Each structure stands twice: as structure tokens, then as C-alpha cells.
Image (cartoon, rainbow, N blue to C red; front, top):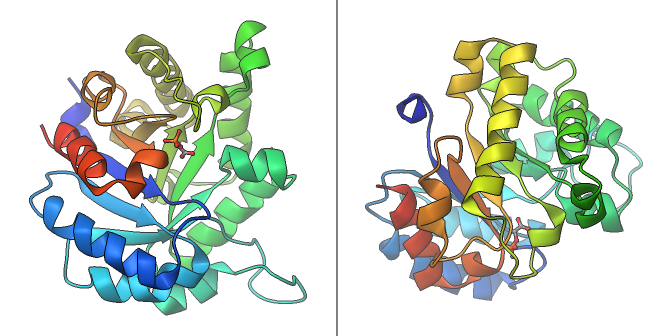
Length: 255
Ligand code: PGA
């Protein structure tokens, strides 16, 4: 078993939910419930909530993340936020390449790779999301799609830099739909991602990389998914807004 070689990470993705006051209240509920977690706990929140989230979580085991980052250091990119800006605030984590960014905001494997580069250069920890659409799964090209997404996003990322990257396998058809990949479907793709990392880097590097599953992970199905050898944590959307459910997932990952 190689699971002991890598950190289990449960990360909430709050998406476009919660005002700063609501974010503070939600974190104040979550923090005591996950205080004895034996895994890393992260809450990725909207940009406007970052400051209050950092203040509320200071001195606790809950880490804060942003939900996206631009690839340039600064400049004429109205509405965007740079990696150095996040680092200056004290934000440690950022999600990159979420399928909602890819499908609603035109992000491509190439721009995802640029964002990863910028985040790593600035010293952020990255949660890199990959995953296939339902039609692609039906066509039997899941592995090709996911391999390409990982390969392009990690182009130019060294083995040393990969230590700051978590990969989240999120089948698009499972996100926010209540349809979860079966334990075996999640395990199969997560395993394929690890094998790709072994090809691109080395066995040792592959075994040390945290690979999450995301897509309707909840209090009821988390234990089964997380029991799989290659499922090292979860990226949690809907259930991360429900303190008891999120805490139950953290507990499942702490076993
Ligand atoms: P979900 O979202 O848990 O609501 O399916 C997961 C995600 O989008 O990261």
C-alpha cells in the first residue's frame, strides 16, 4: 500500500456562494467540527471572501484557497486576479482548471497550463482539475481526455514543483448532478493518472502525489470512494456548504 506516502486532502469548493459575512459564519461552524482531522482540510472560497476566511481560519487546521488565478503577474486584464496578489494576501491554495471554468469561461488545456505555471512560480499550492464529459465517457475516450489534460497542464512542471500540485479527477457528469462515479470508476481513472505521472516523472513521484476525486462526493459515499488505493481525498462542492456533511467527509478521510 502506497497511500501512506501521500497526504489525504479534503478541499471544499464553495463556487459562487457566500458573502463575506456568510463565509465567516460558515467557517466558524466548520472549524470546530474538523479540528481533529488527520487529513489536510482546505476551503476554496470566492475572491471577496478570502480576507475574512483567512482571518477566521488563522491558527486553525483549515487552509484557505482561491477558485482560480490568472497567468500574468499583473497588467491589463480587467476582472482578473494574479498569483502574486493571492500570495500577498497569505492565500496558500488555488483551484485551477475546474470544469465550470473550462465549459463556461472558455478555458483550455493551454490556459490551464499557463495558470499552473504562474501559480507554482508564485509559490501557491495548486488543485488541478481534470475530467471528461459524459459523451466522452460514452465514446470510451475518458483516459485519452484525462491523460491529455494532465499532460498539457503539467508541461514544464518539474518533479520538485509537482510536490505543490494536487490533481483532482472530476468527471463533469458527476459535478453538481448527484450522479457520483462509482468507487471503481473513480479508482480506475485516479490510477491511470498515477500511472501517467510515473511515466512522466517516476514511480516515487507518482506515489507521492495526492490525487483527489470530485463530483457529488457526500457524507454517504465518501468512505467508499476514499477507501480506494488511488483516491487520496476529495474536492467537494455542494456538501462543502453543509458543515456536518463536510465534517463527515473529513472524518472519512481521516481513517
Ligand atoms: P459537487 O462539486 O461536489 O457539488 O459535485 C464538485 C466540484 O465542482 O468541485
